[in-house]
Length: 238
Image (cartoon, rainbow, N blue to C red; front, side, top):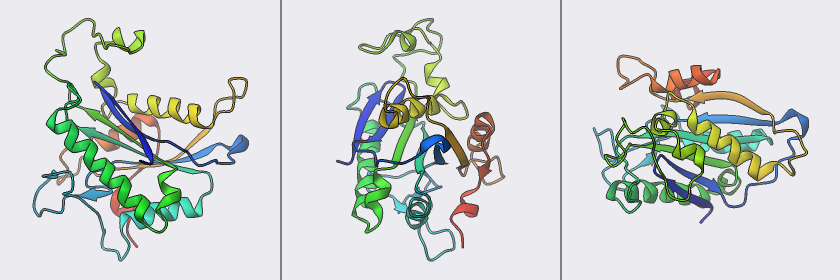
């Protein structure tokens, strides 16, 4: 498997096992950020919003001969300092227990997604520069009014934060903090070196508060990050 899977009560992440070496020097890394569902992939089954199974998905073609996968590969091919990160809310997924049906379905779906990328003739490089984060639903076992939540084997900062589920869910930016830490761990040579500079190119998502959209969480997420927002039709068309 190309990525390491980490499942926390409040976060699911897939991070590259072998991140590609990037000569980022003082200019830093260029970050291209995306939503997942209905931005990069959509269900194969017609007229539904959510996949019925782990394999019920496909890359999207936005009125173009090229798929979203083609465009992602183009970003990596054309920008030697690019990293691509996906941030998604998964309100139908519960990770407590980790073996729940919804969690298993989602993680298997992402494993198939990563496999499809790696099997593409240009996907090998992309897979080594691709990071995925998902915010699951707060399970009933962690009621929202708890003053303290305890997660076995996790740091004290998480155990003392009763709002951690909300903080990692878009439009809040908690997932970004985990991404930054993971990038530092992957690319920073030593603590004596300055933190890696991140140049946020844009955040692309479909939840922008339009009449057809189910919410405005993506555009608000970009606003909270102080990052330019792009619609999928802008990035994946032409």
